[in-house]
Length: 166
Image 1 (cartoon, rainbow, N blue to C red):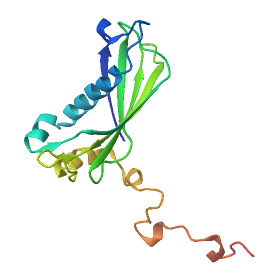
Image 2 (cartoon, helix red, strand yellow):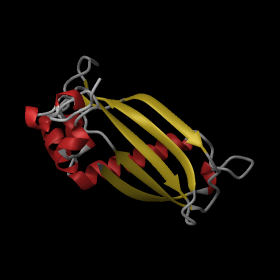
Image 3 (cartoon, helix red, strand yellow):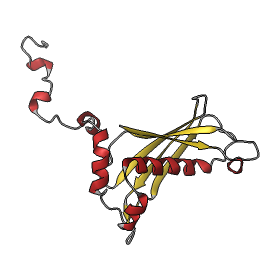
Image 4 (cartoon, rainbow, N blue to C red):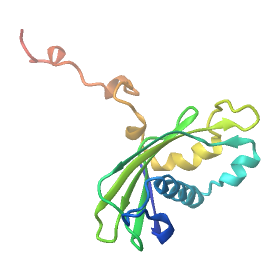
């Protein structure tokens, strides 16, 4: 699993009449954190786009638990719980205030696309290589992934010596 924290100070212009951060600003907070996380990994959006690959948002979800307010120092945490595969990657986010209270949760599903055609393309190998060290074999295996070798597979109790009797 990979995680990265980015701090953002809420500006007055980002709040609504009630003094809460306007809901539309959370997508921008997610983007700031995602861009900084990529930068920390040595991945440049600018270089990706120069190679003709874009990464638009295919899905976004935000769940508000408590409001963020003007001048709050927010910690936006990006979590990559599953390795990127195929043409997509799912980023999860948690936003905390200075008291470490969880304010907001969300995710974005990003799709790698050809900027020339707008069609999905495989995730560039260099991005996969930079993300790979953060995932063990256990994390990359889904619940239906078969064991790598038969030795790893548990034998049904009925086949074990002195096993279950019917």
